[in-house]
Each structure stands twice: as C-alpha cells, then as structure tokens.
Amino acid sequence: MCRPGGHLRLSLLRRPTSDEAPGTTETPALEVGGFVPFSSTDWPGKLAAVVFVQGCPWRCAYCHNTSLQPKRRGDGMAWGEVVEVLGRRVGLLDAVVFSGGEPTLDAGLPAAISTVRAMGFQVGLHTAGLDPARLKALLPLVDWVGLDVKTSFTDYAEVTGVARSGTAAKRSLAHVLASGVAYEVRTTYHPALLGDAALIDLARGLEAAGARDWVLQQWHEQDEAANESRAAHAAAGDAPVPLLAATWRWPPAALLDTLREVGPALSLR
Ligand code: SF4
Image (cartoon, rainbow, N blue to C red; front, side):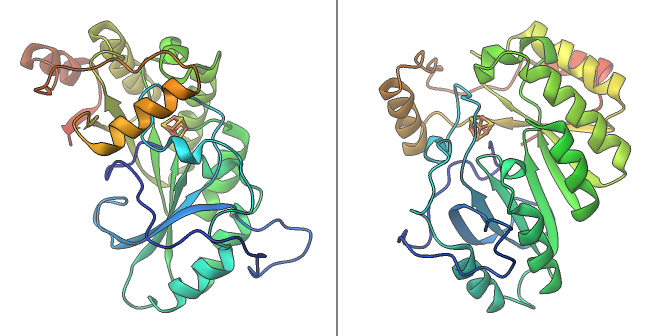
C-alpha cells in the first residue's frame, strides 16, 4: 500500500508465536506484518495506530513495502500482541487504521475490526481495491477508507503488473462512493510510471465516477526504502523501477490546471 508516510518500519520485534487474538477457532486471526503505534498521517486529522496486514498479490513497480507482499504466516507479531498494545492506548488515540499489503484479503479482518471498535477506536482502512466484493462487504464496518488509485483504469497493469487490475479498482471505487463512508482517493505520482495522458484519463475517470476530491502524493526516490524496494524487485526478477531525476518534480503547472479542470478537486501531498 502506498501510505502517506511511505515505507513501513517495524516498531516492534518480529517473533514467532501462536496467535492469541480474540475470536473463534473458525475465524483465522489477522496476519500482522507490522505495527506503528502512533501516526498522524495515515488518516488525515486523526491520531491512529496502524496495523499492516501481510500479503498483496499485486506487484506495483514502486511499492515501498515489498516485504508485505508475500502471504507469509507466523513470522510477524501476533494479533493478540497488537491488541495488548492497543489496550494501553485507549483514550490516547482516535483510531486504528488497517493497512498493508492488502488488508481486505485477510479473512481475519472483520473480527479484528470488531475487536478494535469494541475497545472504542474508530476504524480506518487502506486498500487498493483488489477485491471489490470483499471491500463492499467491509465498508459498513469502517469509518473511513483511504483508496489507492494507481493510474488510468485502462493502464493499471503497467503499474501493478496484473492484468485486469484496473477493472477491480474501478469497481471498488464505485462501491466506496456508493457506500457513503468517508474516504480519500489518492494516487502516487511517479512520473516514469504515470504519464500525462494517463493522469488526465484518470482525472476524467474519477470525475465521471463521482469522486469529490483527489490527492496526488509524492513517490519518494531519495530514501533508503526506495533502494530496498528497488533491490527487492531486482531480486524477484521484476523490471527495474525507473529512476527519476535527482530533483523530484510535480506535474507541470499547465498539466495540474488541466487535471483541475477535468477532474475532482485536486490537492498535492
Ligand atoms: S497494492 Fe501495490 S503498492 Fe500496495 S502493497 Fe500491493 S504491491 Fe505494494
């Protein structure tokens, strides 16, 4: 997931352990890939803890959290440990945000949402909309959704590496907008992966779908996480992530004007 804060850095040690999360034996516990106990950026306007859920089948060329892509089990924090930490933050945090990886694909997510809600937290969800049906079922359970929209819906495979991923994302967007849940639609801007024509097409697509606003967020090349990401993609045999000029730039002013003209209200982050 392309979160506003960028790369995930684990704040607690990984350790193999049996999971002791509340719930029945029929419901698998959430597969936790990482945990950030305090964030002011993952749900704008809220102080939140962020639970990173392991596993994502897409292979976005700019993914900063490649360690969360494999559906590894049993080598992260147990969900029960996360609940324990959250218990000490009741009254100090507004919310818990489930991020990833792709949290909607984890069968343990509904029970995890129910647990944190019972503790008094609001619930945020980061998703790339990989599975529209699962997302639709989860929407009544959450208070806010940060929906990643990668590029023009017809160009998705160029970013995600997965055929028809744009169709899934478009359906997910429609579900979010129809649900009435508070949301943020955001797109990571990587000039080498998101050309001008695709950006304009995306702006039109968002407007046509009824999105009221849209955030373009900066892809950070000049950091350790980007280097880790590039090395991980190279090791997996993926095409190299295109390098950017040393000085990162937003789209030119004329293009931003066009996006504002044809798309939803635009902000840059
Ligand atoms: S959707 Fe893309 S950016 Fe998000 S976790 Fe999956 S591969 Fe990474």
